[in-house]
Length: 310
Image (cartoon, helix red, strand yellow):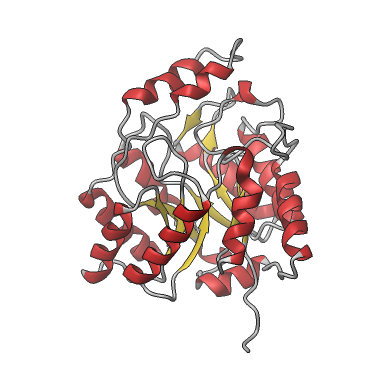
């Protein structure tokens, strides 16, 4: 038998879906995002996945805010820093993708197709919003298409190839695997394939054991057995689906982008680090070894933190 594969823990710190009114512990400002990323890294996350927000928690894509967050994290940790190209609802594709060339990170999300990305129901849980932007931001997603045309995807992949940034392919639905197979066949995908499955979004494939096993099986058949993968597990089921992904030979992702909870009974997580510590304990109790940031770089064939532009 070969040496057992270590598991990479990723922490998605803030995302662009949840709003400050949903949890008093939610990292809403640039300072909070950076600090929670640093703490998550210290708790065992080899990778931190970053969205930017302004002081009132509104998701933004401007370079100044991103740079403030990214440089702070880089100075304090050795973690692999991944950047979103999903941005936030209402952003143009140009705005979403511009961060790649500007910062040339080690990793960045690469969305694998267009979809109806809807989370309007989250507004029903907010009686007294802290900020005026929150409810309109959530409710307008009922009429939202998350645009990622083949032209958009090709531009994104080619830009990442040129910048030495590993695409983290976010797959929201079954047909998006065929999109990736097309780009692989055409020779546009040139780097190792790393998939982040994203089940459970209203408009995408459902979250469940059978659907996840199906997606892993089909991804290998379409893209090769050497792919690496993980899953977003939204809401209260984060830890059981993250654990399932490790058992299936993948990596794991937790974080307050995906879920605000520490237990399925509705107890709120007090930080991203608390979620990282929990999944690390679960994995180690199952005899998995946790990858360090440097080991994650080797596993994912990354260029290293000295080659980014922040």
